[in-house]
Length: 139
Image: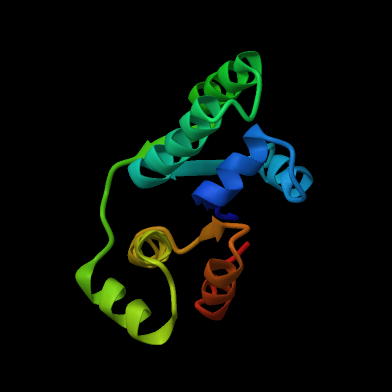
C-alpha cells in the first residue's frame, strides 16, 4: 500500500497559485496532485497580508484581488492549526539562516514528520528550499 503524498504549502507557493509569476506552472502542477494539501494559519495570514497589500497599493485591479481571495478560500488546502515543536525550532535555527516565518514553517513540517512521514514542503523561497532539501523535506 502506497502512502498518499502530503504537501505543506508555504506562502511563496500559495501566492504563486494566485498570481502569475515564474513559479506558477510548478505550483499549479502540485495544486492538482492527488495529495493532502495543508495550509497553516501562519501561511494563511501571510497570504492575506500579501493580497491586501496589493489591494492597498493598487498594484492589481480589484477584480483580480477578489479572484485571488476566492481561489484561496476555495483551494484544496486543509487548515492546519498546530505549532512546531520547541526542539525542532532550536535545531533548525542553529543549523540554517532563516527568517522567523521560514524557521516556523520548516520546524512545523519537521515536527509533523513524526506522525506523517510522507509530508513534504512546497516553497519557492531559496533559503527555505535549500534548508528543506537538506532536511529531506522538500518536494
